[in-house]
Length: 135
Image (cartoon, rainbow, N blue to C red; front, side, top):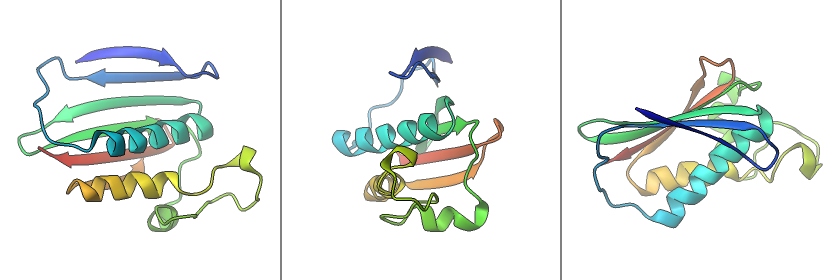
């Protein structure tokens, strides 16, 4: 695998690992997946400050895994936070959170591609997001 380290505009770090082998070509709605990934990375940086991402290719699907070191999402809230306009932070202050659409958009993008969005505990201590897309 190859790794690239980049910084977002706030100076926080994102490390991305991609397979060294050729990634197969498979059909996706580019804008939809781009929006989903932007939302997922934005959340990781907003709530954690550090994110590691990796792409894995299997026989029948690809998997994009984003791990962060933030507070995570409690297991009993994970089904709820992917619903539109759902935020864990209850204030109306946009500086402490977004509109509650980011995870919903990412989940819908995955489903529209025949894939899945899975929220888990990260080995970094925060949230792990797995975006599965069929090949």
